[in-house]
Length: 228
Image (cartoon, rainbow, N blue to C red; front, side):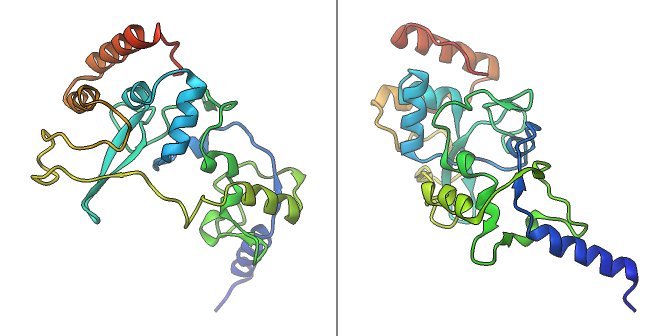
């Protein structure tokens, strides 16, 4: 038997799906989820230019490879802001704020949270709102009301986000995923010495990696102010 409370909960979610008010609360929750951001080569180039460093230095400081056993390959992702947990948070999120918010960032960063809004149905994805009508992004339901046309324009600016996104993949080493001591192409326009340098970093401690990053920045780029 369906109770009155069950009906109220279902109505709450139904009404919540249509909510179009949004105002960022600067909670940092969207940047601290157990998920990773996979930048494209174009986004990496744009961010490298914004930070005035080479793609090599950007890769040393901010990128990691994550092995996907389902397709037996490595995906290039941002490092996290938890050195002991490579699957949590974004390296550019600190004190609940994006320290490169005024940069080009990634398409996903710019379109969020509207990448979870279905314009055809004019409502949010089912898994984005709980049964009581609350969202895992606390900014939804606050601030001004966004029109459907405004949401459409935002989504049209970043058409590659979602199903069309193409991750930057690297092939596994010849001996398989366990043979991490084998050098392989990184997908970047790097010299062989840079390839080997990035490869060697996989086996160093966090402190040693920082030393190498600083050495590269000072030697080739006249120093670099850390963004984290």
